[in-house]
Image (cartoon, rainbow, N blue to C red; front, side):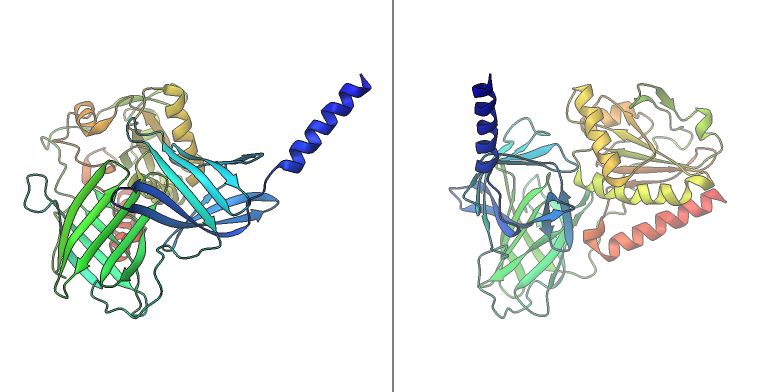
Length: 409
């Protein structure tokens, strides 16, 4: 018996002793999107201790994504993204190298991407600092898949830092923005990337001093699309308040779905009587929905005691009810979103349109419907321009808050 106890004690002692520790500090991670085309998506992250616990903080321009769900065992180093249903499974080699995969569980295909990370490199793209003509500075009218039936318009907004070759920016589209892009210009070629746990975006392009040419956009391992651009400070996309509409002005907003406690919730419930209601059409897999949830949670904290109500209608990418509930709870916890989230049990824009037949169509996640105290539609806002868009986000935030205040009076 004593021998067995000694053996067990020795086993656990050796296991603890052999537990590897990744070095704290800045790392450079790379997702290998397409090895044949040398399409590698780089991003930086920091490993640090917070109250004795390891945290991993991903950097995208000024954005910081803090990850606390980290599991280590001997030489394995695994971590889950804080909002999205995705995770990294890695092997720690020594204390300065991670090799493994990123798995995006929200996707059914092409959802596993090779990953490698090295300690001690703060560069996103491995180019030397250089003086760079600010050819990419400003606002651009962008065409994705130009001159094809799949072409779509966007606005590119880019900024060189103090005239250097360091560049940040984003793309605005009619369905939302491409969040925080960061990169460099090297020998005239633009390189930008973003990784947030859902988006895995890489952009490259050239500039002849007049136009952006030969652009390539990679999303994950299975999407590549050309893009071009021309400077146009006056260019605008369609007004987001004119895209999704009521089929008829006499139509009423009606729906009934279960909440996280399996209770049926409807606008006719006493809780919502004579109160303005903001309806968020969203999904936990959607980065723009995440940004919008962060804003709505703050607005709810400020105005709920004055009568504001918010209801989120979740269109998820899985039929597993337990997984759906868990994903929503993670989102609610992350942003302290105390308003009601309803489970539609549906996915995709077509199903969303079918479930809300009073609307002409749903073209974007998220879509926001604002109702007055009589539950008449005041506005329907398609897409969401988040914090990465700068002034566009501030304008939208100010306008929405002003509308809410007026409806509460």
